[in-house]
Amino acid sequence: MQASGSVAEMIPAPLARRAAWLSLALCLQGCASLSERECRGQDWYKIGFDDGYDGSASTRLAAHHDACTEYGITPDAGQYEAGRRDGLVHYCTVARGFEIGRQGLQYGGGCPTGSEREFLRGHDLGRRFYGIDDRLARIEEEMRSYRARLGSADLDENQQRRLQALIRDLEFERSRLESDRRHLEWELRRL
Image (cartoon, rainbow, N blue to C red; front, side):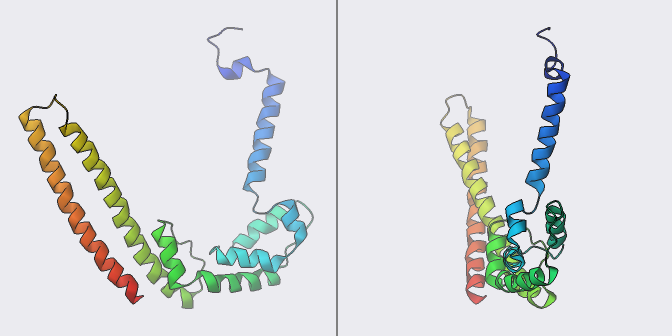
Protein backbone atom coordinates (compact mmCIF):
# COMPACT_ATOMS: atom_id res chain seq x y z
CA MET A 1 0.00 0.00 0.00
CA GLN A 2 1.45 3.37 -1.03
CA ALA A 3 1.41 6.38 1.26
CA SER A 4 0.35 8.62 -1.63
CA GLY A 5 -2.93 6.73 -2.22
CA SER A 6 -6.29 8.30 -1.40
CA VAL A 7 -8.07 7.41 1.82
CA ALA A 8 -10.66 5.47 -0.18
CA GLU A 9 -7.90 3.31 -1.71
CA MET A 10 -6.50 2.47 1.74
CA ILE A 11 -9.83 1.20 3.18
CA PRO A 12 -10.79 -2.38 2.26
CA ALA A 13 -13.90 -2.43 0.02
CA PRO A 14 -16.21 -4.42 2.38
CA LEU A 15 -15.36 -2.08 5.26
CA ALA A 16 -15.93 0.98 3.07
CA ARG A 17 -19.36 -0.33 1.99
CA ARG A 18 -20.36 -0.98 5.61
CA ALA A 19 -19.22 2.50 6.61
CA ALA A 20 -21.22 4.03 3.74
CA TRP A 21 -24.39 2.14 4.76
CA LEU A 22 -23.91 3.10 8.40
CA SER A 23 -23.47 6.77 7.41
CA LEU A 24 -26.61 6.63 5.29
CA ALA A 25 -28.61 4.99 8.10
CA LEU A 26 -27.45 7.59 10.62
CA CYS A 27 -28.34 10.39 8.23
CA LEU A 28 -31.80 9.00 7.60
CA GLN A 29 -32.37 8.43 11.31
CA GLY A 30 -31.28 12.01 12.02
CA CYS A 31 -33.65 13.25 9.33
CA ALA A 32 -36.74 11.52 10.80
CA SER A 33 -39.20 14.00 12.30
CA LEU A 34 -40.08 11.69 15.23
CA SER A 35 -38.37 8.86 17.04
CA GLU A 36 -39.96 5.45 17.49
CA ARG A 37 -40.68 6.32 21.14
CA GLU A 38 -42.51 9.51 20.09
CA CYS A 39 -44.50 7.65 17.45
CA ARG A 40 -45.46 4.93 19.91
CA GLY A 41 -46.40 7.51 22.58
CA GLN A 42 -49.18 8.58 20.23
CA ASP A 43 -49.96 11.87 21.97
CA TRP A 44 -50.79 13.44 18.64
CA TYR A 45 -52.44 16.46 20.25
CA LYS A 46 -49.19 17.29 22.10
CA ILE A 47 -47.06 16.65 19.02
CA GLY A 48 -49.34 18.96 17.03
CA PHE A 49 -49.31 21.56 19.81
CA ASP A 50 -45.50 21.55 19.93
CA ASP A 51 -45.30 21.89 16.15
CA GLY A 52 -47.81 24.74 16.20
CA TYR A 53 -45.98 26.45 19.05
CA ASP A 54 -42.83 26.30 16.91
CA GLY A 55 -44.71 27.70 13.89
CA SER A 56 -44.48 24.56 11.77
CA ALA A 57 -46.57 24.43 8.60
CA SER A 58 -49.39 21.88 8.30
CA THR A 59 -47.16 19.86 5.96
CA ARG A 60 -45.18 18.79 9.04
CA LEU A 61 -47.77 16.05 9.64
CA ALA A 62 -46.69 14.37 6.37
CA ALA A 63 -43.11 14.14 7.72
CA HIS A 64 -44.42 12.61 10.95
CA HIS A 65 -46.52 10.17 8.93
CA ASP A 66 -43.46 9.09 6.96
CA ALA A 67 -41.38 8.66 10.13
CA CYS A 68 -44.06 6.68 12.01
CA THR A 69 -45.11 4.47 9.09
CA GLU A 70 -41.72 2.82 9.47
CA TYR A 71 -42.89 1.61 12.92
CA GLY A 72 -46.38 0.60 11.75
CA ILE A 73 -48.06 3.63 13.33
CA THR A 74 -50.46 6.05 11.63
CA PRO A 75 -50.76 9.55 13.15
CA ASP A 76 -54.18 10.75 14.34
CA ALA A 77 -54.55 13.71 11.96
CA GLY A 78 -57.57 15.15 13.81
CA GLN A 79 -55.78 15.24 17.17
CA TYR A 80 -52.61 16.54 15.55
CA GLU A 81 -54.40 19.41 13.77
CA ALA A 82 -56.35 20.35 16.93
CA GLY A 83 -53.07 20.54 18.87
CA ARG A 84 -51.32 22.42 16.10
CA ARG A 85 -54.12 25.01 15.95
CA ASP A 86 -53.86 25.54 19.71
CA GLY A 87 -50.07 25.80 19.50
CA LEU A 88 -50.33 28.37 16.71
CA VAL A 89 -52.43 30.58 19.01
CA HIS A 90 -49.26 31.00 21.10
CA TYR A 91 -46.92 31.31 18.12
CA CYS A 92 -48.88 33.66 15.88
CA THR A 93 -48.62 36.76 18.05
CA VAL A 94 -46.93 40.11 17.63
CA ALA A 95 -44.60 39.34 20.55
CA ARG A 96 -43.55 35.95 19.19
CA GLY A 97 -43.11 37.43 15.71
CA PHE A 98 -40.81 40.06 17.21
CA GLU A 99 -38.85 37.39 19.10
CA ILE A 100 -38.37 35.26 15.97
CA GLY A 101 -37.40 38.25 13.84
CA ARG A 102 -35.08 39.63 16.53
CA GLN A 103 -33.11 36.38 16.37
CA GLY A 104 -32.71 36.86 12.62
CA LEU A 105 -34.91 33.85 11.85
CA GLN A 106 -37.17 33.63 8.82
CA TYR A 107 -40.92 33.18 9.03
CA GLY A 108 -41.92 29.75 7.74
CA GLY A 109 -45.55 30.60 6.93
CA GLY A 110 -47.39 28.56 9.58
CA CYS A 111 -49.87 31.19 10.84
CA PRO A 112 -53.49 31.31 9.70
CA THR A 113 -54.42 34.35 7.62
CA GLY A 114 -56.18 36.18 10.49
CA SER A 115 -53.21 36.10 12.88
CA GLU A 116 -50.46 36.19 10.28
CA ARG A 117 -50.68 39.96 9.87
CA GLU A 118 -50.02 40.55 13.59
CA PHE A 119 -47.19 38.02 13.64
CA LEU A 120 -45.59 39.65 10.61
CA ARG A 121 -45.86 43.12 12.17
CA GLY A 122 -43.75 41.90 15.09
CA HIS A 123 -41.47 39.87 12.85
CA ASP A 124 -40.71 42.84 10.60
CA LEU A 125 -39.79 45.02 13.57
CA GLY A 126 -37.67 42.24 15.05
CA ARG A 127 -35.81 41.75 11.76
CA ARG A 128 -35.09 45.47 11.60
CA PHE A 129 -33.63 45.34 15.13
CA TYR A 130 -31.58 42.32 14.13
CA GLY A 131 -30.22 44.08 11.03
CA ILE A 132 -29.22 47.20 12.95
CA ASP A 133 -27.63 45.28 15.82
CA ASP A 134 -25.76 43.02 13.41
CA ARG A 135 -24.36 46.01 11.52
CA LEU A 136 -23.45 47.80 14.77
CA ALA A 137 -21.48 44.74 15.90
CA ARG A 138 -19.63 44.61 12.58
CA ILE A 139 -18.85 48.34 12.80
CA GLU A 140 -17.37 47.89 16.29
CA GLU A 141 -15.19 45.06 15.04
CA GLU A 142 -14.00 47.04 12.01
CA MET A 143 -13.21 50.06 14.21
CA ARG A 144 -11.22 47.87 16.64
CA SER A 145 -9.26 46.47 13.72
CA TYR A 146 -8.53 49.89 12.24
CA ARG A 147 -7.51 51.32 15.62
CA ALA A 148 -5.17 48.40 16.19
CA ARG A 149 -3.61 49.00 12.78
CA LEU A 150 -3.21 52.71 13.60
CA GLY A 151 -0.93 51.72 16.47
CA SER A 152 1.41 50.02 14.02
CA ALA A 153 4.74 51.73 13.38
CA ASP A 154 4.77 50.47 9.76
CA LEU A 155 2.19 52.99 8.51
CA ASP A 156 3.11 56.08 6.59
CA GLU A 157 1.21 59.35 7.01
CA ASN A 158 -1.19 58.67 4.09
CA GLN A 159 -2.11 55.24 5.44
CA GLN A 160 -2.75 56.74 8.89
CA ARG A 161 -5.01 59.45 7.42
CA ARG A 162 -6.89 56.82 5.41
CA LEU A 163 -7.50 54.67 8.51
CA GLN A 164 -8.60 57.73 10.50
CA ALA A 165 -11.05 58.65 7.73
CA LEU A 166 -12.43 55.11 7.72
CA ILE A 167 -12.89 55.26 11.49
CA ARG A 168 -14.70 58.63 11.22
CA ASP A 169 -17.00 57.20 8.53
CA LEU A 170 -17.77 54.21 10.72
CA GLU A 171 -18.43 56.47 13.72
CA PHE A 172 -20.88 58.47 11.63
CA GLU A 173 -22.63 55.30 10.44
CA ARG A 174 -22.74 53.99 14.02
CA SER A 175 -24.35 57.24 15.19
CA ARG A 176 -26.98 57.04 12.43
CA LEU A 177 -27.74 53.39 13.25
CA GLU A 178 -28.04 54.15 16.97
CA SER A 179 -30.58 56.85 16.09
CA ASP A 180 -32.48 54.35 13.92
CA ARG A 181 -32.41 51.89 16.81
CA ARG A 182 -33.90 54.45 19.20
CA HIS A 183 -36.68 54.99 16.67
CA LEU A 184 -37.28 51.22 16.56
CA GLU A 185 -37.44 51.12 20.36
CA TRP A 186 -40.15 53.76 20.18
CA GLU A 187 -42.02 51.64 17.59
CA LEU A 188 -41.64 48.59 19.84
CA ARG A 189 -43.32 50.39 22.73
CA ARG A 190 -46.26 51.12 20.41
CA LEU A 191 -46.74 47.46 19.38
